[in-house]
Length: 66
Image (cartoon, rainbow, N blue to C red; front, side, top):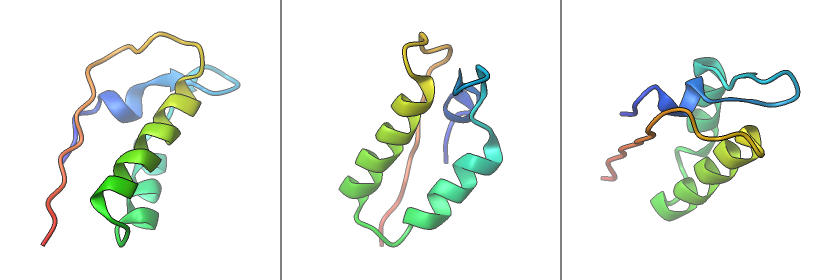
């Protein structure tokens, strides 16, 4: 579960939203890793995409581990 703040963040070379598709690809590619590793990866992806731009929305990602 997540708020849309993560994937609507503008950034990158063209100052465009990260996008839901990119977010879903990222989640799919890391789903077998530990929750702590996922947190690090998602933070890195978000911060690298955002660059020096200001965060535009609140961001919440909620995961459940079994």
